[in-house]
Image (cartoon, rainbow, N blue to C red):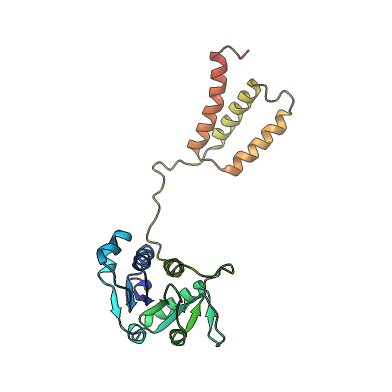
Length: 249
């Protein structure tokens, strides 16, 4: 078995016409953990230029496979789905990218599975759509035409999520502060009330109502101990500033 179900996913570009789209597809594959790209009668391209567009992807570029016909490109695949922006009169099963990802990964344990994208100008022709298990359409407005690499990214993103293959994690904060104690909350509220009183904020308002609202707001915000300490320090500095400038009686 492969280390990831995504190792069984093959991206097939049928007669791509622009090297930029090939490179952008490679970039999307690298982002989403898919490493197998097959090209059917592609435009001529320079691998150095591809890597210049999709930096850090030479490992994928060097493994690109080329085919002269579609049937050979997907001969070993146990499930083939084609992406298209148009609906046909024929009764071809239509699904969205999320359903496509689930279907492909369910079949991936049995062998390679393929997602297929067509030419930039005309998409997949009928004779290719006749060979796929289902046609995948990306929900859009009435302006349904997507750039080739954009469509590939949507498909690969759904596969990445469905495979639970989020290998990139965000580092936690350098110093993860604990939650405030009740004592720290009460110190903050007391000093904040003192500072608001010092600037005569309560002159035409009810202190009890204002402080009750402030308590509710603070609890909903759920600051950690460091954040609460910062807010308390600002309240205290109001008092200190007024003392320094002789504005506080």
